[in-house]
Each structure stands twice: as structure tokens, then as C-alpha cells.
Length: 63
Image (cartoon, helix red, strand yellow):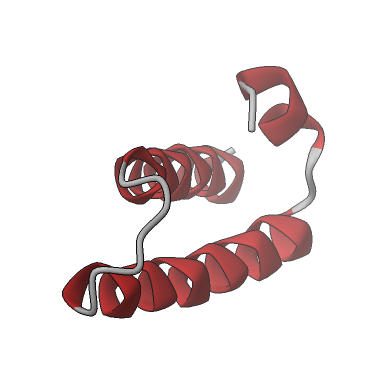
């Protein structure tokens, strides 16, 4: 998800995306433990997107 896409989202949409990505990250961790991960870079990418969404959410709450 790009910065421009994140800026366009509302607070509720950001929260929904964070929940979805956290579930995905949970599943990636299980796949990693069972050696079924097809793309290990997805784990770090997902973490970064979650951090970007949380940062954007804080900015919208404080504004």
C-alpha cells in the first residue's frame, strides 16, 4: 500500500486494514514455522504496512 492510498483512507478503513493485515501476519508466522512460506519478504512488508497505517491513524486522531 502506498502513502497516497493510505492518506485517502478514513479512520474506520484504516482500522479494518490493520486488523486484516494482522491476521495475515499471524498466518505468515505459522507458514514460516511449518516451512510453507512462498515469499518470506511478505512478512516484513506486512509489518511495514501495518506501521504506516498506525502512523497515519495517529495523525488523523490528533488532527
